[in-house]
Amino acid sequence: MIPKSRHLVGLIVLLVAACRCMTGQQHTQASSEYADKASTVSFCDLASDPERYNGKEVTVRATYKYGFEWSYLYCLTCLDKGKAWLEIPHDIDESSTKVLKRKPKGAGIVNVTVRGIFIKCGHCGHQNGYPFNFVAHQVSDLVVLVKGMKSLNEEQKAESQWACGGTSPK
Image 1 (cartoon, rainbow, N blue to C red):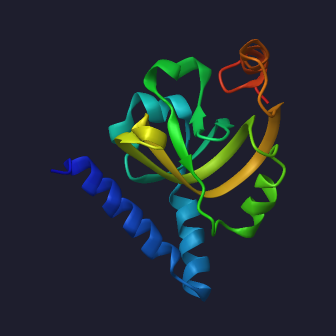
Image 2: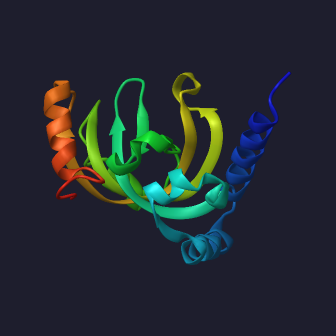
């Protein structure tokens, strides 16, 4: 038997896909409406009160760590609350594509502003290892913190200084 939460995640993904099928003026108008409705929140607000933001369009500034089998948003000050698997659709808008081309190839750690749908899924992402999913609609303000994979020590040093929740976040 499939848990109800998986049905909900499937329904939300289907609805997001249906919205993305709009064309022309309707799509432009809808994007403008989404931008107006997308409230800006901290990542820790999302992780601390996921029920409040579940299924809603939000804008968040967080640290994005990605590589071969990981792609997630987080903030150091609330790591205990969980990370959000970041889903970047292949058909994301052109300005976001340009921003994403600036991220290091293969693996890295960057700070980024993302607008999209936040989903409390319990078990999503790679090997169902994340309590949240974030489906990006727009990506901006990317700042590189670490290029490629480094030693754990080097990554932690960079994160503690520049990542979300660090001493001097970029």
